[in-house]
Image (cartoon, rainbow, N blue to C red; front, side, top):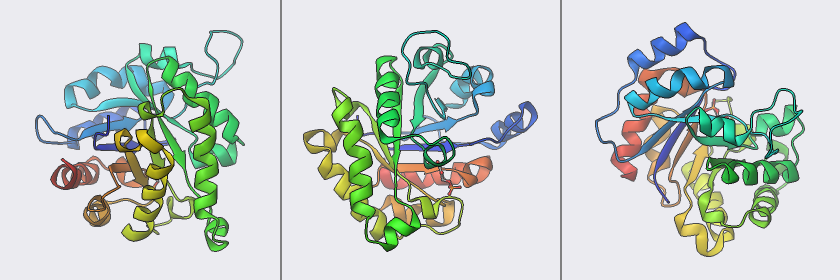
Length: 247
Ligand code: 13P
């Protein structure tokens, strides 16, 4: 399932009005050979489901519960609920959740399993902080985060991985294409025989101006886009870049 994928992550942004306006400006060619998805805030998922389908956009959640069965888990959404409203994907282990909600590698692995059990493709985020990069811990940190997931799931070829260096998120600092490529190659190697079938996305200040260079790298299969995905014209350009380099 190593398909090129460009996913926008709206994070905690949007409103009924802003979402409708976003859709007005979004354009990708018919029958695009690159999967395009948007991870919208939970309250808008059900409303956007049909509209996204008409626009050729797959629906994604920004998180999923690690719990499989319904029950007393206030504030959480199960994989089955996400599937029920049309989600194809769920982001798991985003660095903002690892930091602000103190999500551990073990919890991220459990969420990955829960998404898979519900038939929702987990987009597992990994990435090092600036301090970790400066201490030359990048490869060790990413390997540790990924190992927890590899250990937990039965068939790792069913996941998508997103390498998002924390220092490049929302900062305007992108990893150079070479820096990103080196980590992506290590991720693919760690995935073993499944590696050739797993899409590995890059995330961190991706915009139309740097997308071409990133997508030219052999182990970059797409992008997880934050800020630039809030502008649908800009996001469409990133999708076009993916279509020309990854299709
Ligand atoms: P930015 O593109 O705003 O750096 O965010 C990246 C990100 O966190 C996507 O999940």
